[in-house]
Image 1 (cartoon, rainbow, N blue to C red):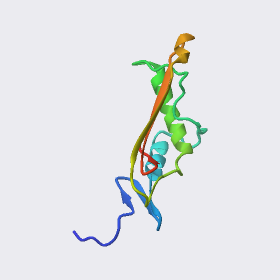
Image 2: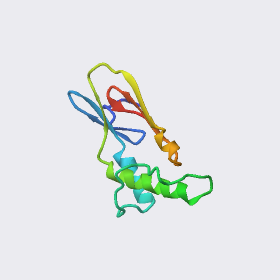
Image 3: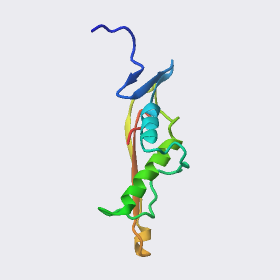
Length: 121
């Protein structure tokens, strides 16, 4: 085996290089998944999750949530995580709303982790 050049794609993640940094895009993979499930002509969801859908084991809500993720991914296919040339720092943020619990509905929480200002989780 011989190394002839820099990789353009690793594990279906497209690497986009520039003088300022590098971007990772999963557009190829997302397009394959959307095509596999026949969602090419579906409308786009602006969020990946609808908190009004209750998720229970062996219920229809889980399937509806999975299809919503496909519609969300369709709208984000052109996005990528960009890593610039500044120091790479791992940061985490979280938020929660438990006020809704008093009104009879469930609370909601979320988190995000960034590495070098690019979201990783």
